[in-house]
Image (cartoon, rainbow, N blue to C red; front, top):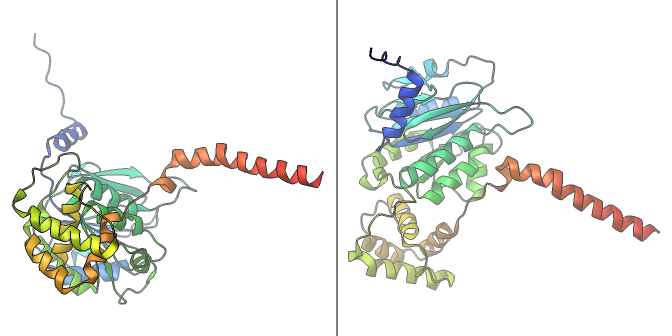
Length: 329
């Protein structure tokens, strides 16, 4: 007698889909807090529904309050809007909203939800999602910070910028300037725009082939050597401006950062960027900063901080006490 067919497990099926998903849909991650809903509504009112991109909106929500945010935002756009579900595959031309009391990541085109960490652990859902997007989507990552208090989103935008993606912050139209200004002051924002212009920029980026090339840091694509002379010229500009020679730096990373700059200026080739550098001497210094920017997760690593708290700090404090006691004796 044959064994009965196993019953279908939706969660296992979703995991299978996660593993088989090779070409995830390009995702635009948008974070907001106080005043963010107003800004997001305005952005959606100017955004076409057929960009081919998927949008994920992460807003600070009270853990026990049904905000009906998906219902509210659905009135502002013809795109389908839905609350994100665990292991939900991401589809183009849709808007996904984080549920209350959850943190969220994206893994191979699938949304992965986790319970909110208990206090005193900081709740930084925007940073968490932005960083997961940067890790997977690399050059194709687009991160936007709208109105809100405090600084959630700054570290996440930094990760996206390091990966070669595009970062945008709301301008002075933000009702609460904390979150946008934190990212701007940190130097991790490429464009500072009102919601209507953010929508126009997303439309432009959606039609740009380079932004849709979702790459992996671990799989180095073969580079076309036809433009290596232009690359040398670009690095010469950087060396002249900053005194640092990047000729032995990782070429994949260099190209990623240069392409990111080209996208911002609507330039098509490295030769075009060389011309831009000649006309705009300050750009070489900006590219230099982009090449050196780095992300640290030290203060967000629970194991590291627990070790510091239990092992390092007691030794430092104990050492200071011994010094004081010996000095007073």
